Image (tube, rainbow, N blue to C red; front, side, top):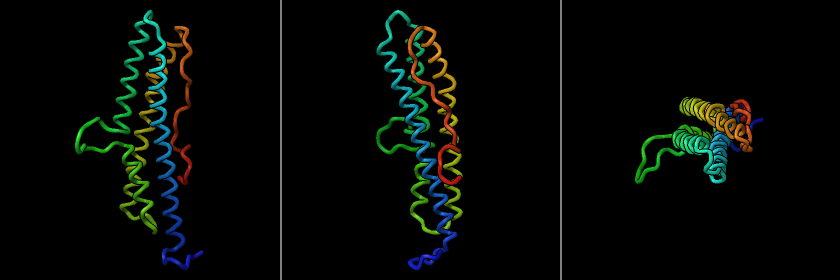
Amino acid sequence: MADPRTDVPPSARSARLDALLSAGAWYALAERAEGRLQDARSAVEGVLRNLGSDDPGLRKGGEALADTLSALRDTLFTGPECQGICGGETPFDAVRETFFVLSSGSGAPSPNDRAYVERARSALERIVDGVNAVHQGPVAAYRSALDAAGYTPFPEEEPLRIGDAGGRE
């Protein structure tokens, strides 16, 4: 149904809404991915605080994992620490920026908007793949080492999937 307040056709508004819903869902999924990294880092730090000095292998493995998790968070979400104007863009920046670019228009997504969407989708794939890889690799290995040593490891989580993000993909 046409809206008498605007000359934008309903199909164009619907296309914008579809893109915006997907971008919003991608943004939420990227935030969940960052949360998983932070939660894993916090869990490892908790283990290190409670770990006795009798197992230097677990301590060394935990410290290495904490460094890996921090480095991945820097790469995907925050960028390296710096002072002044810091160059570069993280994959999370691309996802976040696309949501705001799409929310500023009213008609169907333009070719430029669609380029932002493609860039965001690619960036989200990098985020999800990176977070899943670290959880299925180093985090799982450390969890197994803790379990074998008699410690209660932090919980295992299902891999993130872009299709689980909601929206209208």
